[in-house]
Amino acid sequence: MEGFHKKLVRCIAKDMQPIQIVENGGFKDMVHYLDPRVTLPSRTTIANTLIPREFESAKPALFLELQSVNYVSLTADCW
Image (cartoon, rainbow, N blue to C red; front, side, top):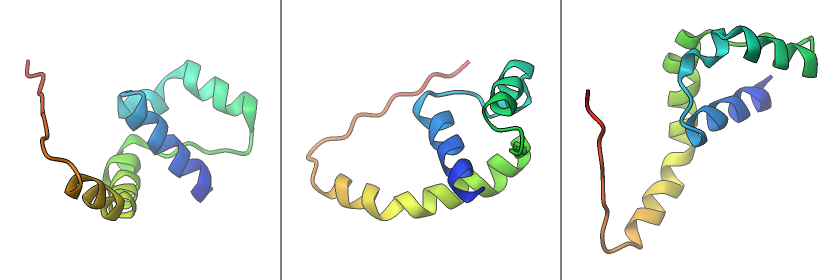
């Protein structure tokens, strides 16, 4: 299940999907169709456990990459 959780978190981050996608009926149906044995984690588990774990895993590579750049541009979308 660890590999699936990692792919799920990366999918959410890469495609900028809301964490709540795991509660959507269509998403649940698709995952169940692909593998009926899979139990989706809750959005709380994703936010409190899976994303922090993936961040800690990716942090060294991110810091290494940021050391090689001269400029960084950030943007925010506030409502």
